[in-house]
Image (cartoon, rainbow, N blue to C red):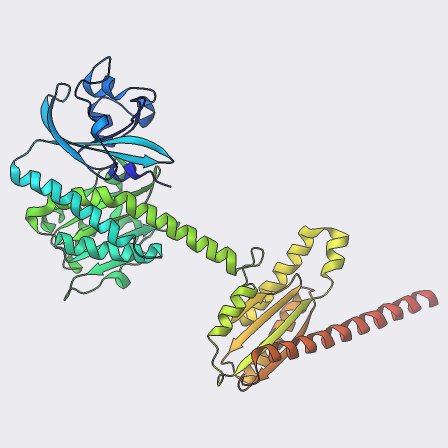
Length: 448
């Protein structure tokens, strides 16, 4: 999980964090590292803040650690001899894992109007994160944050793009101002070459600012046509990194020209929060998948079956196909569980081929179930016959109990129980035939 100070990683101001008791530097953002002559975060390990930032051998005489308290910033000005410039400094205490750290942001001293913008930026970011975090799910948090950013920055559209494993860019989240046409549906599976120039900049930690779309007509014609179609005149796009890997980008369209720098800072600071929310979303999805899916077959489990049946209306027709993989225990005992797993997945493949558009579930070690809502009776029996043919072609046998009802007024549990009884009848018939065939083969062998 990201540390809170990592939200400032790409900010175009100086940010550092130090241990308040030992003065050891814990963190410096990209700009601070570069400005003070470091190549990577590892270069500051074990170094004292006063050594690096003030070129002192002992703690600074103006150190205000004793005045700081969590939740409050103390602001002051100071001429830094290493930077050779006047800076506005904002200090506070933050707590992480029971320890206290000093967080310092240093802004170059600016005109009063710009200085007010910096303070306003800080307030807006804090409020945006506060509002977004009120929501329970990571996806809703992202949607609310995009809306907040869009309204706060006065732009027409805010969005997040995520790069797929196949290298395509997909617009996964979007907010648009009133009267602006949504583009999310049109921006799926974008070929890599459209954003290729952007990703080249992302590789060297640069974000994208296009003040006038016409400026890229010649240098980036593919992106120019893509943006022009969306009525984009200007934009800011910030890369999203998961450690060193670029996972996508997010940005705003058509912001007010006078606030481009202001908006750029705001987007860079909130980028780490966006990434953290995306990672939390992925974790939630993974946990949900593990909770509702059988890991071997990727069919639903009993929990998923219950969720599926919640959508069933009593007046809808229902087909139940209850299956049992015969001989699984013998295969496990004779050949090992890897062969047993192969038998299970092969049987599931046959079930998916016939009933793939319906609800499929593994409800026991060798028991599979297809729940077919709103299926015609003739189609159900046709698919069961297709399933049996596919199983025979793979030399697999499953006992099958099929059942169709015009509605489920008598209760779904009863219907599943009836289908299970039919499956056991089919299984008993199979073993009876298998036993007779085996006895006949033995008798024939004795005669010879």
